[in-house]
Image 1: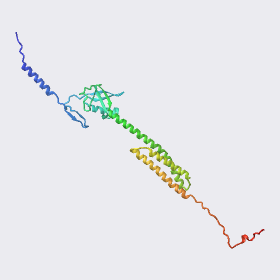
Image 2 (image 1 turned 180 degrees about the horizontal axis):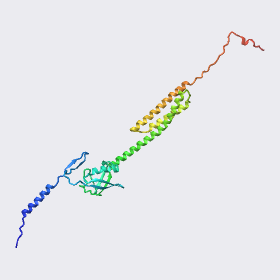
Image 3 (image 1 turned 180 degrees about the vertical axis):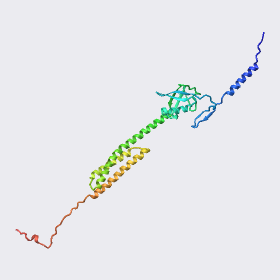
Image 4 (image 1 turned 120 degrees about the horizontal axis):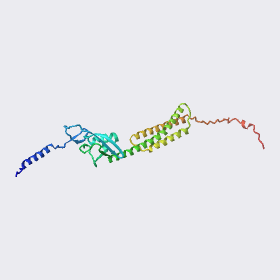
Length: 259
């Protein structure tokens, strides 16, 4: 009978060599900073064949998109591609892949992204709140401008009337005082409307400009009213008295006395 001799020492040495070689081949994960400030996993420069491009499906609410990205791209770079399609800035996007939100610095291939993989895109809740606040603020500003524009249209009409009165006075024509005072009263009413509009930012300058227009028109009409009153002819009442000579008795000379 032939017995087979086992070399346990040799087996151990072979296993140790295999383990050491596997450890030496294991890559140490390193990180690098991109120019844009994004922290990503550093890749080896001795890469083999060029990485393929992937067609990725993206679901954003009821909308569906399909983009092309390199397999070694990061999720942050995918967000930049989606900005052109959706309009959301990268900081406003959240990408869900395989039930997990992915960070900007993670690579597609490392996370297991394949051809025709599906991403779920959601908007950052804080971004939604900021946009809602901005929409309310813009709506308020538009309302203020609309109110100012309504008053401005009425002021424009009154300014034309003031200009017509000025030309009429310059031509030597008379203008009724009632017409001038009525126009002043209408201008003051619009000044009160302007003052009641709450404004901020650029709307304040527009409101102040219209207020100055009203003030200038009122001052012009006051000046016209003074000129009109100055040109009014005053009526002078004169009484002519007849004088008599106190020494003349001619008034009683022809009187006849009766019993």
